[in-house]
Image 1 (cartoon, helix red, strand yellow):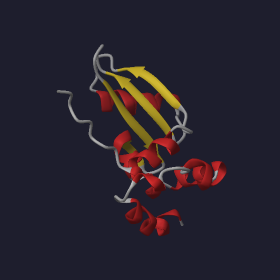
Image 2: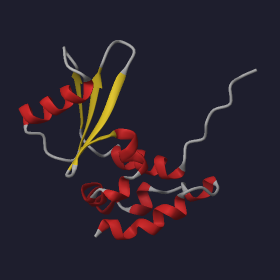
Image 3: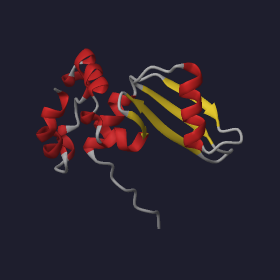
Image 4: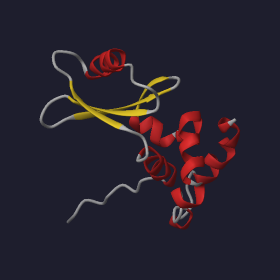
Length: 123
């Protein structure tokens, strides 16, 4: 019997679509922990927000981080709460909400309505 796949929320799917337009940087941890490697890379390169950092821990594990104007966050948090980041709102405005979120409304009901309540966060 096959394992039932967990359904991803529309809010996270919307965040993934937004983050697809953010520049991505890939790096190795070296002798540092993943978050330390990400912070050192940001400091050494003078990386501008927004950016995604894929930090390869070993051949099996990669940690994903989002560098935003307010600091370093896990990429999953940024996907789920993309509406809280002003720099991601600029991307939504440039690409267009209709293009970016097309087809997400039809997938049933979950926390999409909750995301709509957070419109004030874009100010």
